[in-house]
Amino acid sequence: MSGWGRIAGIFIPLLILTAGFAGCLDDDDDEPEEQEGPPPDYPYEEVRNFTTIDPLTNETYNATWAIFRRAQGGNCCEHYLATTHNGWITNLGGEYPTWSEDRGENWSDYRPISEPFDGLGEGAIIEAPNGDILSMSWYPYSGDRFIAYFYDSGTGRWYDNMIEREYPLFYDRPWIAVVPGPITTLAGTFPWAGIITSNLWDDMMWSLDGLNYEPMPDPSTAQGTEVFDLDFEPGPELDFLTPHREIQATPIPTGGLLLPRYFGDENAFLRPDLTWARHRTECGTPLPAPHLVIDSSGALHSVGRSGKTLIYHLSLDGGKNWSSQNFTWEEASRIEEWEFQADGVHELAVINMRVQVGDADKDIVFHILDYRESIEADSITLIGLGDVDATSGAGHELRFDFASLAILPDGGVIVSYQDSEDEDPLFALELEMPYGVDEE
Image (cartoon, rainbow, N blue to C red; front, side):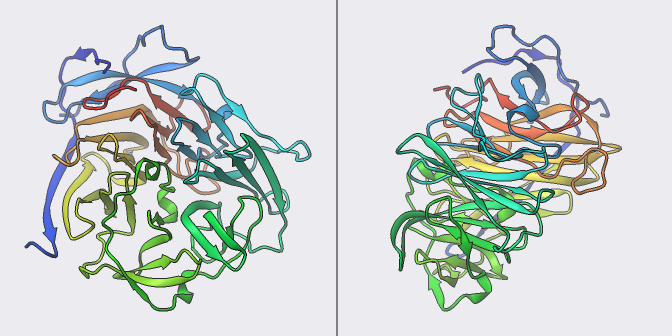
């Protein structure tokens, strides 16, 4: 485990509140500054030190991160980051897939020869249970076209397919999720299905090969109710199947996909035959929030937003009982964007929060280590300079459309952010593992 150089403790404007325990079976003004002088021996073109805080002591440390820019897969407004079980970093914030197989030292991309790129695409990417990679980019300013990209782990090759506009159109960028199988349809049995949808879950397509997509019914067509608990022993691959928070979908290890609280207190469940049902647990208690992550250890993580606070809930018994913790930044007027990821192998949960403080946004990463022992933050890192106001949506001079966060198999974090170093969003790769996470 790499150490962090200690510097003088300062007052940190941070508030973390405990929110209690619920069950259904058993009842100063100084700003932290970015530190200069990163170690010279890292094999990256750009390395920065970010201020990291021990919330128990208020002491601060230098944490070293590698920095990447639009050239590594983003666009004017976002990165869409994900990781794979064998340690790839993947990114499809822009027109085509970009990836690194060696922890960011070298980067590759896949571009269809016949397709011109105008810098205006926006996409999504995720790994499937067998190591395949599903991805798609949308070209809203080039005829409203889509290109599906697929990496076949068996052949080690990328493929692509243009999807014409007779398919339903998205109101916004595509979001992607994978449905663990076996998937059984009239066409046969498949190891997984890919789902592409808009922000509204009403323009949906599904694929059984990662290249050809067709429209599918939305969750309002649900027939019947499936009752089962969420107590699983999934295995390590599930840590890399978690889709972006915006899609609010949870892969089920035994097959299918859950949309938490889609029907209020009940969930929507996409069965392994790709039909929809309502879902509730045998316990009958609703999930705490619409965002649910099931990690490789079977722990359930549910995160919701209330004002400028994120409420993190954890269940270690399939959702029967929950502990909870509030996370906020005291000086913030609001939360602009946020994301959450968990890793069951390292018992690591990570919250990325982008908050408005005065006229600028700050990007903050909370590490929660050994979450089975405590769900309080063990470290808090201020990512970037925190000196620009970048807002999602068209018409803004600087755009940061959504937060993006991923965890590598060694426990290292990758997170998008924005500051005055670049007019486009950047992303940072953690080079020093936090306390309690061993480097592979």
